[in-house]
Length: 431
Image (cartoon, rainbow, N blue to C red; front, side, top):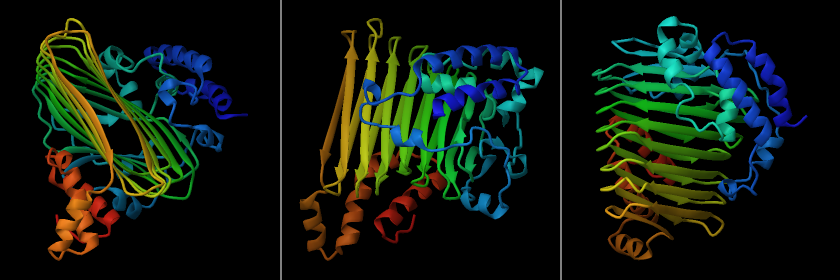
């Protein structure tokens, strides 16, 4: 039985664990879409450069009940100097034992708990499944298994001071499908920090879906760190709908894994809003990271900023496919998109395709990409001033990523990412 057949067969068992009628209807429709479409192949234009064949051949447990993990391991994978509310999931299942939730006028809990709580039904019925594209096969598959995941509700005007830290730990060969629903109402603010970590030599495949609904003048920030083992693959689907005068920002930092596919989509629902997507990738070995982004400018007077910086070493590969759509009514749109890449090895490669589709005539839009090697002139300049080769190389690459890093406003997260980069460059720097 291949993975598609296994998932379809296991669907019924998953269905029987849910009592929410709204979710049951969503799941039923979604499994039908997955049955029809199955997993994408390289014949699909959107998956042309990312071949999942070997990932799909592996053996996975669709369900796991094992949440047993040593406390010291959990603590070792948390960002402990981050002042945070903490949500920990082990093999896809919420672990209250390792989570610290201090609700202070907002809600952060497990989606499975929220689905059973009457006070959240209005929010769930209104928003769950409202942003993720129903026809997308990975989103449909996730919807058909929706149960565990992060549920955040930040009411109007609430500013959440602490970061919400979310840690997904995996200890077994599992196929995981976390579903996150984040609702940030008018004038609210929240910051979320997320990691997926495999703590054994298990083969793991995760298909995550996050829906974020952003109200008027709200300002959420989402930080994703992808630094897992080379036996683990991740398809991360994030869909954001935001209303007028809001600012939604997503940072994606990718360092390790087998195949990492990021589908990041923004949908505009009101004027004078701002969408920001920033990313740094520093890859080695055989890691493949594929960043697929979409910004749908469907109303006037909005701005989007997209900046991805990537460094490839070893036999690593990268894909960037960024699409900006500007509807004919979206006058006065400002849209900026840039993807810059440095290849450190002859065996590393990147396929990059920035796209602009503009149907309005009064806009300011730009896009571009660069692919090159380390600046030899810069290296020569630094070496001439007595800086050793390794440190000179590190200085140039830190300078390359600095345009993104300076936008990170949470110091522990910024330091954490910089330390990962320093370790990769084998230099000892203080942050």
